[in-house]
Each structure stands twice: as structure tokens, then as C-alpha cells.
Image (cartoon, rainbow, N blue to C red):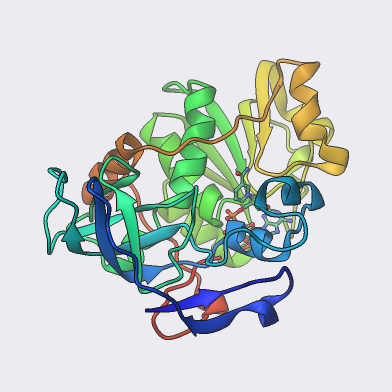
Length: 299
Ligand SMILES: NC(=O)c1ccc[n+]([C@@H]2O[C@H](COP(=O)([O-])OP(=O)(O)OC[C@H]3O[C@@H](n4cnc5c(N)ncnc54)[C@H](OP(=O)(O)O)[C@@H]3O)[C@@H](O)[C@H]2O)c1
């Protein structure tokens, strides 16, 4: 099968289109023919080993995983002999956050993993684009136990995680203020944001409003800059490590900062399917970074 392979860290120049062996499903696995995948921020970070510390887990000198890609939508081509949840021909979507490997024509995954039947109203491309962002945003929002009426500010509201954060926060009944750039203000409103702030015209950390939660979904701010926006028991969380890994260490000293480690699950995929089918979760696809004609890309 064809796959995009990287055997060393670096820029996109390290990516090569290669022939590699097609996998065979084990007893509890399904073989998925990938019809759409994405190139997301996690892929670019892993490809370049952007955070040196990440090499402790992904390979000190060269990558242990040679095919990146964590999001996919596709068709089940074969099933292992113990598989009961899916059958050949099912259209599915999901995540592969441990072994990655979706930048290939085929992948084998456990039937119990983070995969579900594709939302019937979404294309393969759209379905692939509502996996990682919603999964990361959901992990944060679940951790803070967001409630109806809570006020949340989402910075980076047009991105994969941010756009999911806006939509899921609305699903949980929160009042959402979205921070984005001029060209994406309408997009944020269409996703349900109650208020929008254009960061190219206004410093959102100086607005005269207080929030229960500040979600920096792009890591361009910090807890210290956002403190003024926070109510007494408010919580700040960011998708980035922050200056000198501060977002990892601050939770040790204050309950006002959280940095949860995300965990994906089939239950999440089933929720995203339900929300997509009821129009409460839309894919935000950015094709600026197209990799090849058979990969749908989103960054
Ligand atoms: N914690 C984790 O496990 C984890 C996993 C994946 C990614 N991440 C991190 O999470 C962040 C977001 O990831 P993503 O996949 O959502 O990225 P993405 O899809 O590229 O979205 C980033 C968004 O941020 C917006 N943006 C850029 N500069 C901004 C600024 N100064 N202020 C406000 N918004 C700005 C961009 O849109 P505009 O240009 O329209 O503003 C873009 O839509 C990345 O920094 C990534 O490293 C964390």
C-alpha cells in the first residue's frame, strides 16, 4: 500500500510517498481503507519533534512511528474473526492516537478503539476533520465540568481545537466569547459563539468582562495575561505548554490552571457522530496545507 513515510525529524522535506506492507487485521481488529485523513497540528509537531522533550516518548534520534496521521474516515474492508461491532463495507471515522498511521491507504484498529460509524450527513473529508479537535476540546471541557450558563472565552476559535471548543461549549449550554481574526469572525458566529473579539483589532485580555473559564486553544496567551479576565474561582487552560512549560507546572501551585492529559474513547466518537448528525458539530476544514490528492488536510 502507499503511505507517507518519515524516517527522520524535520520539515515537510522528510516526508516520502512509499510502498509499505498492507496490514492484516488481528482477531479483534478491522482493516480500514482510508478515504480521508488530515494533517493536523499534532502531525506537524511530531514530524519536526518541535518540543525536544517529546523525543523521550517518540524516539530520541529518529521517529519510532514512521507513518503519521491520527484522524481518518474510511470503509471497512475486512474484519478479524472476533469482530462483532462492524462489518465489511461499513463507513467509519475515528482516531488513532497511539500508533498514528492514518497517512496511508490502510490501517488496522481494534473494534473497541476510538472508531464509530461515520455520521450519515458528512462526507469522508468532513468526518475525518471532526476527530482530533473535538476529542481534545472535549477532554478539557469535561475536566472543568462546564455547566449551563457558564461564561467561557475561547482564544483561537477558528482552529481545529478552538472551533470544536466553541461548539462543544455551546452544546454544554455555556455562553461563549470567541477570539479570532477578522476573516473568521463570521465562522465563529456560525459555530454558535455569542460574542466575538477580533484579536487583530483588540487585545482580548483587556476587555471589561469576567469569565468562569478561559480556554486558550492556540496557546498564544498565558495565565498571567488572562488573570484579569477570570472570576474568583475561574479556571485557565491552554493547549500549549507555555513559556518554560509553565502550563504543566502551574497546576501544581494553583487550582486556577489545568493541564489535563487527553484520552480518547469510542464513547467520544459516538457523541461526535450524534452531534454531527444533529447539526451541532461542524467540520472546519482548511485546505491551505494540501499534501496530495488523496489526503484531505486540516491545520
Ligand atoms: N495539548 C495537546 O494534546 C495538543 C494537541 C494538538 C495540538 N495542540 C496545540 O494546540 C494548538 C492548537 O492546535 P489546533 O490543532 O487547533 O491548531 P490549528 O487548527 O492550526 O488552529 C490554530 C488557530 O489559531 C488561530 N490563531 C493563530 N494565531 C492566533 C492568535 N495570535 N490569536 C488567536 N488565534 C490565533 C488560527 O486562526 P486565525 O489565523 O484565523 O486566527 C488557527 O485557526 C497548537 O498550538 C498545538 O500545538 C495541543
